[in-house]
Amino acid sequence: MNLISKLRVKPGSKVRLANVDPDFSGGYKSEKYAQQRIDEQSASIAELQKKLYAERKHSLLIVLQGIDAAGKDGTCWHVLKSMNPQGAHVQGFKQPTAEESSHDFLWRVHPHVPARGNVAIFNRSHYEDVLVQRVHKMAADKVIQQRYSFINDFESTLTSNNTTILKFFLYISPEEQLKRFEERLDDPTRQWKISESDYTERALWDDYIKAYEAMLEKCSTQQAPWYVIPANHKWFRNLAIGSVIEKTLKDMKLELPTPTVDLKAIRKKYHQAKKEKR
Amino acid sequence: MNLISKLRVKPGSKVRLANVDPDFSGGYKSEKYAQQRIDEQSASIAELQKKLYAERKHSLLIVLQGIDAAGKDGTCWHVLKSMNPQGAHVQGFKQPTAEESSHDFLWRVHPHVPARGNVAIFNRSHYEDVLVQRVHKMAADKVIQQRYSFINDFESTLTSNNTTILKFFLYISPEEQLKRFEERLDDPTRQWKISESDYTERALWDDYIKAYEAMLEKCSTQQAPWYVIPANHKWFRNLAIGSVIEKTLKDMKLELPTPTVDLKAIRKKYHQAKKEKR
Image (cartoon, rainbow over all chains, first blue to last red; front, top):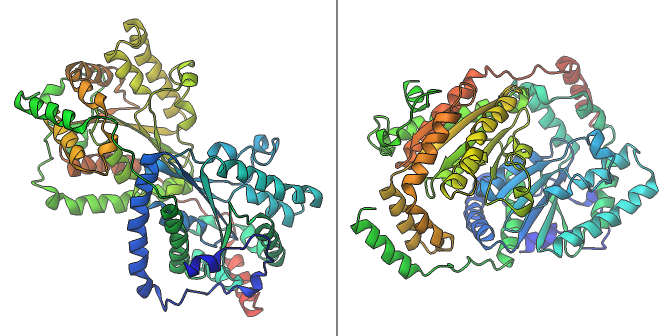
């Protein structure tokens, strides 16, 4: 529990990412020592998601942001692998299409929020509109400032409808990013992903950090908190995010619905059917 | 390969499900003997799906139909567990909403067909409109007859746009269904799923079989074939479906896209950045 509150951005607090160590690994020396905990978490999350899906009272929205190669895709994979695909899905948000851009910035995300019983992961999200748009000055500063409160209002609408929102900012160091880019260069199955902008965006690192800090400060709210996840170690990232998800689902006090039918009567009918071979 | 053509419904052929053994297990004595093949398949499908996603030329639509407890959910889980959740999703179709019913029957499914690079699994589908609607006489026979050809036309539109369509009818025996219903009765975590209709629909078994046979006869086409999957053994169902998916993806001759950037130049920049520690 201590870990979770350490990672959570306290609403209204100042955020200085320079004070966060992206190598932090929660006291675990290596993946080997954390593996058991990660496996337990996955099993527990699997059980809890079944209840979430069955009960259909709550929904869970997980928002992932982070610089290129921060591990958003890997996180989606890890989180979803313990969930029934029926009730859990990833929604990625790439550069907006012409139609999307001709609407307000929340228009394209709203249809993808999870219905009661469901989990949705946003791989990038409405926060792009206060990140890339801010860094590249694609919107006036006044517009960006307005968006922070539009986002908070939007998220309040969701939470008031029993959607729990967890927002994870995956934080890696510039050195780790470079290492991951280089690994991609060496891997023929991933070379196609490499783009010129991977490199050019690195030059804007400091601007991105400022944009992330503003996002964390202005949009970590009581009902929809941001978590800063030290993500240089992929296994610790998984463990930290798993801890938050597990605790969040547990706090929902999920219950399997009681059967709507008379089980005894049904059982009797089955016995009869078996005797009659139908 | 022999297995695959055995399972495929030859376009224009007569179908008598009474001639299919739902216990068939392809010569494998038990799950133990099939496990290695199932694991190999999963690994191979994982690799192929990565290419499908990267290449963005083809898409794959998997349609699942079958009576209650035939194993549609379990199949979704099995197929998706070897795929990147980013590019693969399940879409379930339940009883149509009032809005859905006020449109043509393809209206609600069309938005969910997979974009190029993606895989979609339909857990139930537009075929419900020639199955449950036929059995319960919710539409006139003339309307049902028209729908078969509307479906074929619709599926042609999709395949002409590089969507490969695989349709699996999961075939279990009434005894196996009863066994699975009884297991549900004994499992407190699944009792909530039991409904009165599980039992009452069983009385319509023969009508359903006729509706399935008509669907298989009229809508197994060259470009979008139906496969009848003996599904009393869950592991054989997974193996059979995996075989078809694996072969289908292989036949697409998927290729990773060639990198769009000069990898050498990028590598040089990275080296420079490392020296300068930025």
